[in-house]
Image 1 (cartoon, rainbow, N blue to C red):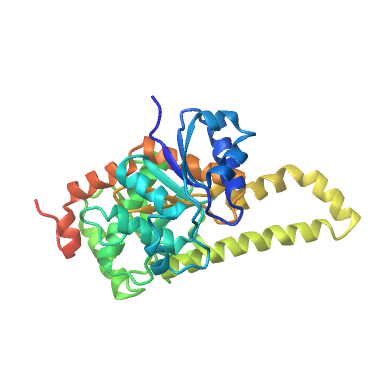
Image 2 (image 1 turned 180 degrees about the horizontal axis):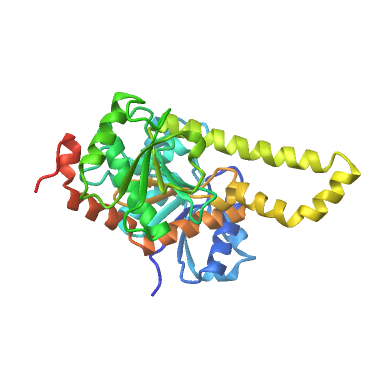
Length: 350
C-alpha cells in the first residue's frame, strides 16, 4: 500500500530547487512507496528531475514561481499564502491533495501559514515545534517547543507533553514514554509558577499514556534516560542553539587538533572509525525534520541549510508520521484524557 503524497516546497531553503529535488530523489530510492507533489517553478523542477527518473515517475508538479524569502515577516508571507510555494504546499494538505508538507523555508512564515490553513486540534491552544535530538541511549529524544511559542502557561506545557509523548511512542515503541519538563533544577520547588503547576497537573493524571519523571536540567537532555523534554519555545530555542553550537565547536576542535601535527594526523588515522561515528552523531543533517505538533495535518520543517541527505531524512520523518498516523494518535489521546479539562487546567472528567 502506498503512502499519501507528500507535498514538497521545492523553492524553500538556502539551496533551493536542486537540493530539495535531490533530497526527495534520495528518499524515493530508499522508500519506493513515496509519492510527491513538487510545488515550485515548473521549468526549474523539470530540469532538476532530469537526473532522477524514478522521482519524476512518482511526482506531480504544481507550478508556482513565487517564494517566501528567508527574512520575510510572517504577516507579509500570510498575504501571499495563495501564491507562494510554501503556502500552496500547506494548502495541499488542507484540501487533501497531499497527506503532509515539507518545507525548508522561513520558520515563522511556515508556522503562521500552517496554523491559519490547518488550524489547531480540538483541545490544543497552540501548536508546538518539535524535533528529535541525538542521545547516548538507544533512541533520540523528542524535544518541544523549539521556538513556536515564546511564552507558555501550564496548560500549554501539559498539552505539549501529551503531543510529545504521542510522537515518542512512534519513535521508541514505549506505551508510556518518559516525559520531563526543562527547568533550572530537578527539585520540585525550582522553576516558574507555570512549570510547577504543569508538573502538578501531570502528576495528578495517571490516566495519561506517559510517565512523568519531573524536571530535567539542560545538561542532561542528551543522556538517553528521557524520551520527551518539554519547555516553552523561548527556552527550547536557546537550548537547541546551544546544543547545535556545542556540536559544531566539538567538531571544529577535533579537526584542528588532528591537523596540528604529524603525530596528531597519525592518531586521526588510527581513531578514524570512532571520529566518523562522532561526526555522524553531530551532523544536523542526520537529525533533520522538525514537526509542528497540534495541527490538523502534518507539516515538517527542514533546516534551511540542509544537504540532500538532510532533506531526505526530513522526508523520511514525514512519511513515518503519516504511516503511523501521528495526528490521529494525538487526537485519540486528547479525547481519552478529556481535552476540555486540559483547556481549563482542571481535572479530567470521569
